[in-house]
Length: 473
Image (cartoon, rainbow, N blue to C red; front, side, top):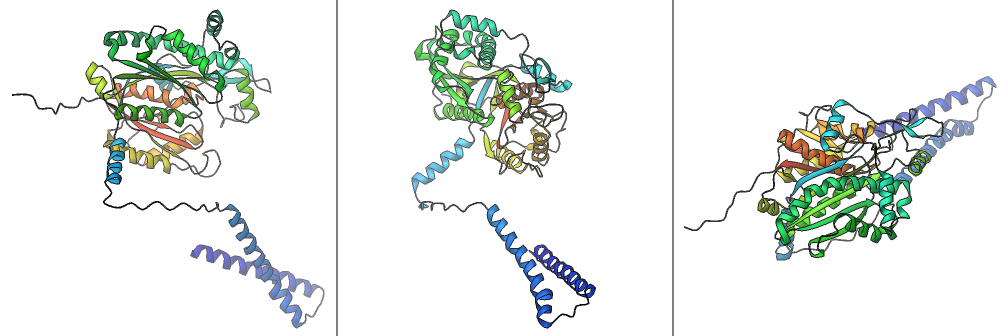
């Protein structure tokens, strides 16, 4: 309060001094002898009018800047002895500690078709290169992170031969490349899934969730679902296969779907099923690049604080702890619940970039997961090259993870793969699984690529729970 008072008083005194100096100098230059009324008006009322006008204008501006007051409805009173309220609180506390097992993480990116390739590219400092296909308005090559030798023509021929209902929709370059990425990835996924499903017979179910870009035509969802099932699981009995398509627009939307899988698996532990979370995106087509350029979002030599188009695909194979222990599956990593939040202003809006939200999310996550901060050896980010994301992450993680080396231990996937919204966070998570196995220590996965939305989770080594059931004697 006192600094504000001193500013107002000092400004007022300075205003009086300037007005008096100007008025007295004017009178002296004109050899004018002021009357009492002149003294009151020019030396008293005039400076007061300046000061008052400034204060009124400042108050009006502060009023416009203030957010509107929204009346919040009063929360219903809860009795302390209400058994339902107590049960709900206990359930919520228990659900915050839920976890799910990540069996495999499959990726296809511009730097390779495995998480090892992605981590090696980050370690070597690899970056997206200028494209030979696309140029900007000035005629310079556009920087892209595109998958080389992607068989788009082969996929389109296959869709046309099958007379699939999506053949017209797949004719768009961005859609065709996305489906080709998914097709390439699912070839590897099926090699892992087919023997596992065959081994377990009818007991094990498969649940497939395909995260599609939110800007895709919703009328095509039924055709896309039919295409996915007929081409990759045609012989799978309907009783053993559940498939859904979920539109997502941001990385945190994808993380939210992962959290919903976690909740579902733990709320019904007797349900023996595998969940395959799929996602693919391509932003390296001519239409998308032109759209980004028109919206001042495209990276260039003159504007290096903008996005680099990328493309890739990811698949996460998930199961509950009970299913993992029953099947005795190897090389499993445990995932915590996802902690999510939103910044009060976009990270690109200018001014000081704070990491307070990330710090709060991480602190709460460590408390719930009962993990010491010194146990975490690596942080995987979905962020790209932009300094705003890096600065925010370093400030948010610096207080809690001072032992981490910002260069060697804080790895940003987007720096090598370009912008992969909305699946970049899942690709970072797939890489986190590889890091957990390499370091045998927890890895923090942070999503801060979006302007506002933030999410964190922990990937941890799997430890079998001791059997507490008493044996007969």
